[in-house]
Image 1 (cartoon, rainbow, N blue to C red):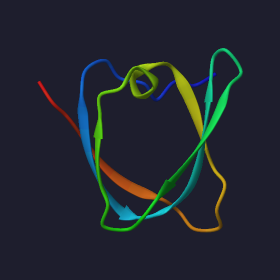
Image 2: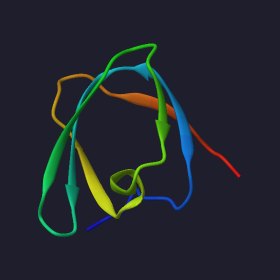
Image 3: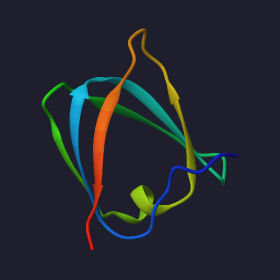
Image 4: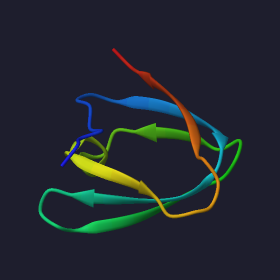
Length: 69
């Protein structure tokens, strides 16, 4: 399973929104709906756990992510 997880907090800006699905190593899934222009702060344990991500919509989703040190 490819992992998109990163340790530490991250911030993001959604350039083009859409519907994503996260699949965690334990088999659980979580739908994530992102809206264009939305900002994100990813500091929760589920944001830092290893997961793969699948685009469930018809458009490409674009998000700028910044690692916070």
